Image 1 (cartoon, helix red, strand yellow):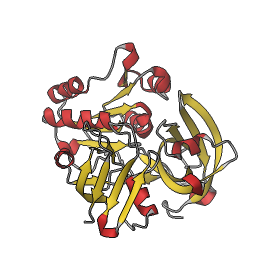
Image 2 (image 1 turned 120 degrees about the vertical axis):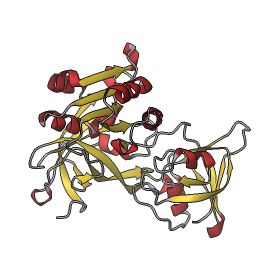
Image 3 (image 1 turned 135 degrees about the vertical axis):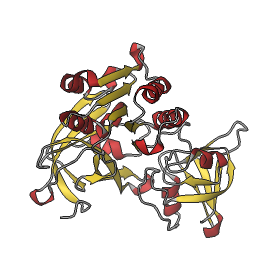
Length: 335
């Protein structure tokens, strides 16, 4: 069975491992078991609310936080997002004995073995993409520092376990304890003391932005920085706005629980997309006009491209009302 083939995995354990964060252990059928290397994830099929239509199936990606060596048990850890469109709520509703349709472990975030030194930076539940890497690199004798940032310890899953296993390699940065992560100071020190460091980052967009800007500012090589996103939290609260695609004669409303891509598809647009996380760029469309502020929630467009405002990743990015208070509107063209 191909790793990308969906199969029915049985839920064998569930447990809350931090505030609003649940661990779900899956048991794939015998023919679908594969080893989960550090950085792998599963694509899972979930049901999300769809207005008057009830529910609709969608695919979400969740990191494998740990697994058995033979792949017979794979653990996911999912934050119940207050802005969830239904995916995390579906996973939080699973109980032992339930079935979750999912792929085998897929790799988009591999760890390169052989670097001079490693810096792993996790924000909140982003630890799920880096915990296995920290354990593996430590076991291989690599020099690795795991900087783990969170608002409070009760919202930082696996922190105590990782500290017990990895000791001083784990550097907690806990905001409510007065040790909030200072990204600029961390990377200034890295550039000064260990410029050959390879960094891996997973967390919210604000953390990724801070790291990528500081990485460039301190002259560290772009090829040594790798990151993965989770979710698509933006800089503005999600609100309803109108979107128009004149080439197809479409005008519709994007409600707070939907994306531009979903809204256009429901109106009949056949658009290209893939990752649904703002990473691949396949869904990028040219922007003709914006009333309001584009809330870029992707990591595909460069900082200059986002500032220019000429295009947008419609799978994640949104529009918020601007200071002029007009109803937000996004008018798109086809490429």
